[in-house]
Length: 258
Length: 314
Image 1: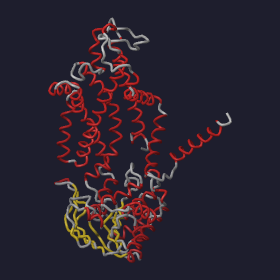
Image 2: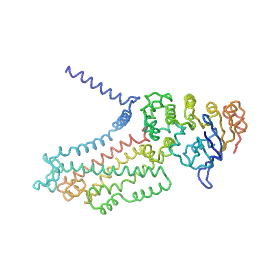
Image 3: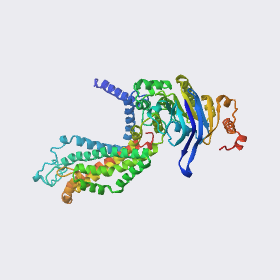
Image 4: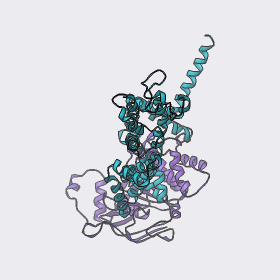
């Protein structure tokens, strides 16, 4: 479904160039949920942005549903791939009602019957029709993230890119959103690429994951191996240990991998 | 009496219903959602007494201009030479000028000219400024550089001087004055729109629109422009005073509205030789300009408090 080969992303030029992604490769099968894990600055979100066409300065190969991707994306491309952003307070237009926000993708892709589709989309993410004409500032963070998910789903894309969809939410709401995403994936046979720095989120959501550090994939492993605490690479082991809570010995023996 | 009471009750009931409709947390139509927004803005606006003074002055200007034929006895251009330079009286509230024309009538008819200038300038300046500013800010790079250098050129000249140059090139007249004022006024709007666009162009809701497949034109029109609009409107109302003064200045110099049109600046110019003996001839139009300019300024200050996204939840 998705193939990424030797992807590089560089910001800036010359001596000040920052090589955010340095040649990573992975494939994601149809219906699979793939996790990209890494600490801040490891380049995981940059990979998603390059896939979504938000960053044009990339090199390498990317193929989505058999179609090789170029630097610019045709409008039709976005019917096969949608993205949910990290910050539910920033990803909804402050002057648009929920109705406008959900209707926008339908207008862009010239899909009719918007009234039923909008009500369906609200229903699917567990919000009632009474939310339809509210403004984003009248909604809580979790409700806004539900709207963002509904907006991505309303044109029925087979692939969803999730950029830390729960990291801006508090813990109880995180679980609701994750369960919603799991349910939607089962119902619509969606393919997910989930970016997170939180190993437990990835373990809950994904079948397979890649660990990224400093722009490279250090290890790809299945969630079973992660749960069994059997990673191969020392960086993954260190990340796993860090995720178990504060440990003075681990903190003092912190290693840098580059 | 007995009949009045229930009717009052019903009226109070429907008023409460309207309030509930306007404040309901579950609007049932896009129309209701917009009305609620306007109503909440209006509530915070009407709590500001100074802004309300400005609003009432502008409202009065609009009403007076709309009903000018009903308020005045003539069209303000008919001359009665035996009634020259009469002081203010019950018959001529603001007196008469050197050609025996009623100054009250001329002020009222002049309000139409003032509104005409202000509206026409706004209609030209806001779209041009928004277009240049949002395109420059959103696309960046060489497009930004070229558009902003053009804007800088217009910003570099004092407004009245540049307007004078334009009018002397185009020829005197109201339309040319409007064109000249518009040409010298749009540049700050482009600057504001660009600054606002720069702050939001990498916001996630703009990125989200791009990922939905929206074209650049659609993003600029539906996503960027609505967020620039409030600062532009505030700036416009605050600029209105300057526009009116420039128009009056051009009129005073004989480059704006031509006689016998009752333009306020031209009226001051015509009457200035009578300032010492018949003070009302130039003073009344001067007061009119002052009051209207002040009204727009006060309104602009109030609107800034309501609309400025940085001063609270917008």
